[in-house]
Length: 114
Image (cartoon, rainbow, N blue to C red; front, side):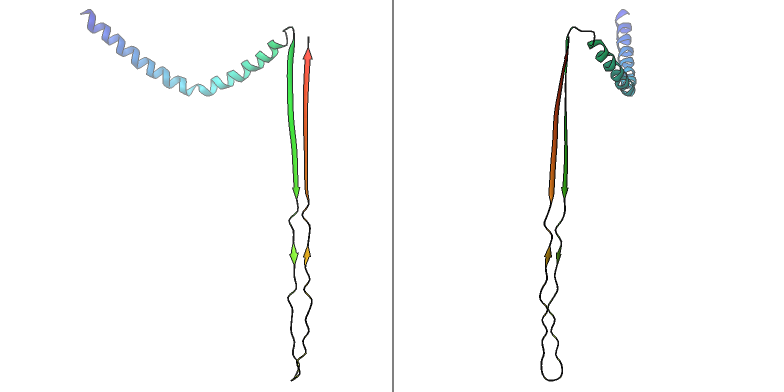
């Protein structure tokens, strides 16, 4: 009689663990929020140590470019009466040069407090 009761307890524990897994999967968002607050407290606790070192690196890059534009005029021919008079207009082309500006700023700040 003792063995069937033990098996029933094992089955009840397995069902309760599956429900606990579902509840833990739903409360992951809450745990991540608590981890952010706990990490904030960890930063505050590091200030009480004897020596702390912190490095910050920042890179800022800006790129500016202007696209080239081309303008052209097509040649035209005109004829009057029997004599052909041709007027040819010269082809005009305007090409704007491409301008590019690349600026990069890198800064490293190292602070040591003791």
